[in-house]
Amino acid sequence: MKSILIINGPNLNLLGKREPDIYGNRSFVDYLKSIEPLFPDVQLRYFQSNHEGELLDKIHELGFDIHGIVINAGAYTHTSIALADALSAVTAPAVEVHISNVHARESFRHHSYLSAKCKGVIAGLGLTGYELAIRYLLTL
Ligand code: DQA
Image (cartoon, rainbow, N blue to C red; front, top):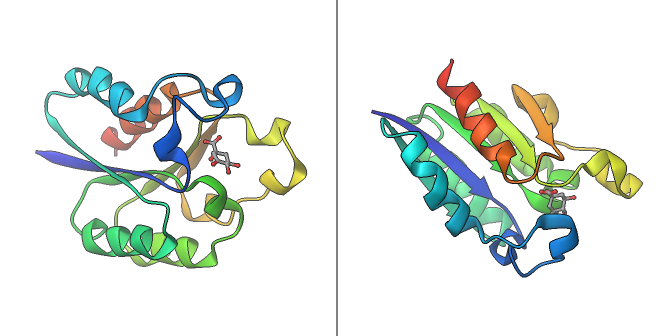
């Protein structure tokens, strides 16, 4: 069975409560439950942390064994060379996801350290971006 790791970074544990006009009013766990039946032959593994080192540790732990990584690193997207290096280090291909259209927001959200290490980027399509990223990874 293929395993896909979904990683959410800082503040994404607050989805549903956090700035709902930008991020919507659904919790990620609720969303994840709703898409699991769409992928009956896939093991979806979910990890969220507000701590950069924990995100690194999870990528190191699973990144050599799983089929692919869907990563929304939250604000670490725009700051973390360490996460970019971790994505380069492991063998699993990654897709970067952002719920909001970061390019339509403040200029500090326009640059991502992760994009160059990922197969592609999905931004602005809400939570649906995660499902689309999984579907793409399963084509690899
Ligand atoms: C985000 C966009 C980031 O700029 C922001 O820091 C987040 C969420 C998104 O999913 O739209 O925390 O990654």
